[in-house]
Image (cartoon, rainbow, N blue to C red; front, side, top):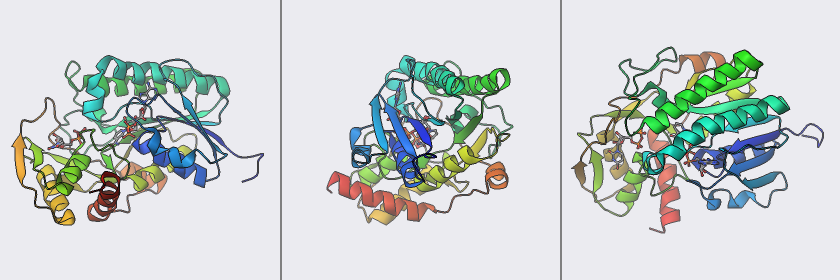
Length: 317
Ligand code: NAD
Ligand code: UDP
């Protein structure tokens, strides 16, 4: 790409798990990348390898405050994603989703940038429609422990569609389902990282509840491909659009697979199920297949092997 038409792309939450992979991908695609993060749950190590790249810039900034920069596209990923992180300071979590969305939408409006929101399957709550389609309005407890995240993300979606209707902004809303891969934080309590770390240490694998609850796990590279395709899609494609891997597993099946792939001596132990823990989750990705020509390419075993390799190295086990 020549200097003249290099796209200037802002990634909020760029030092996080997904954000760091997205920054990498955008640099490979020839973009100028501005990574904005306040390091609430992200770490500098995730992007340290990009700091020497002349087309990468890092700005420590909290998106709950206004930001004045000149960009062509905005990926709004800033928000802690794991229950441990987002429940640690729930008021800040809601502020990040809601004030962050207002500030980034205001920025997009001023500079006429296209803006993508990293929304979540949590907008469906503990769903009574299975698998979840985009038309489903969800079943969320508005006052529970997960509400700061779920309702914050729902309000952000509202803001995106109101800015579209009121100010004709170019918006894209991705509803991301559980994603895993290298650079997940080892202590963020998410199930894939927890199980891999426990298995590598031959420590008991902690299953919450009966382990019969289900999730559908998407490998990070597949997810990033979906986000980039959505951003590049035609103006009338606003979403919301589900991005995730539709292959569903019980949490017990995941534990067994992690033990097998790590050749671990870990046993399974059962702990209390956290409040409002969704019983089942599986994306219907018909819309993403039709509109973006996208579907995940990496099966669970292959993605877990790569993620286990990362944790083996980073933990030094
Ligand atoms: P993460 O916690 O690793 O990354 C989030 C990043 O946002 C971190 O670097 C954090 O420091 C930063 N951040 C938080 N509050 C901020 C603020 N006020 N100002 C600036 N930066 C702030 O999480 P992730 O897994 O990379 O998730 C990224 C996005 O994708 C989030 O919006 C999340 O809700 C969404 N998402 C992720 C998943 C998943 O499975 N990983 C699923 C659904 C949705
Ligand atoms: N979980 C578990 N053991 C753990 C961590 C999580 O059994 O050590 C369960 C958790 O109760 C939930 C599922 O795994 O049912 C996925 O949890 P995670 O926090 O990764 O994502 P979310 O609940 O937000 O989908």
